[in-house]
Image 1 (cartoon, rainbow, N blue to C red):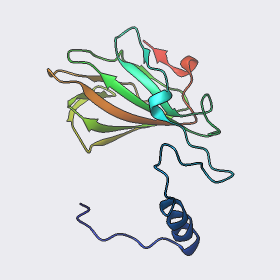
Image 2 (image 1 turned 135 degrees about the vertical axis):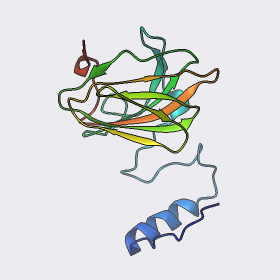
Image 3 (image 1 turned 180 degrees about the vertical axis):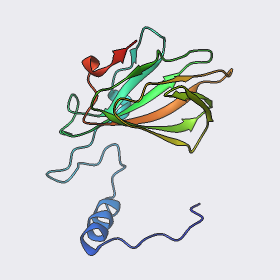
Length: 154
């Protein structure tokens, strides 16, 4: 349940939302309107990094028509730390959906947990460490889109 007032949708957005919600088929079997792309996250492959964090793309230029950003679902298993790194031009937002851990950003540490969003500017050295017994789950957005060669390690 949402505890705060909702903003009204502009007329066009309200119409689109109503027409999408009025479909009788389930969301997974519904045929999207022309010009709408639906990426099914369950069909996206998981990748494991050397540090044992695992990720799958929700939407990016590699699996969708997105051009200017990428969104990933990331799991950091218990006891795993992402290797410190930075990006020269990428701005990132780490949004915690489950679990908790320690975010290190330019040498400062802060505990993060569900509902926290950490904004990381280009050039800021960062890492996240799961110091708990449960997995830490994040949604990470990057603009411009993340690519493997954008990581700069010490």
